[in-house]
Length: 60
Image 1 (cartoon, rainbow, N blue to C red):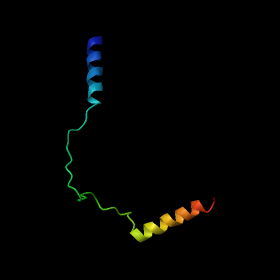
Image 2 (cartoon, helix red, strand yellow):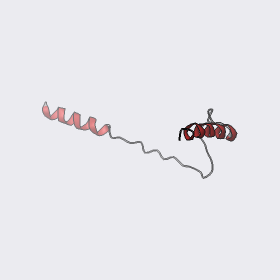
Image 3 (cartoon, helix red, strand yellow):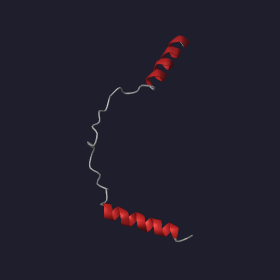
Image 4 (tube, rainbow, N blue to C red):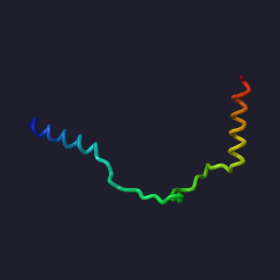
């Protein structure tokens, strides 16, 4: 009984270490993911960052 239990525990612990062997191929300069719905235009992003920067820098 103990031998069977040891074998089961060993097999279960080995399956926890399984890693998928799938390979993802990428092409340079081509993004194939989903579009980012939260992406901001460059102007909006610049305004937000400028506001954040000024907020932090004024306390010094």
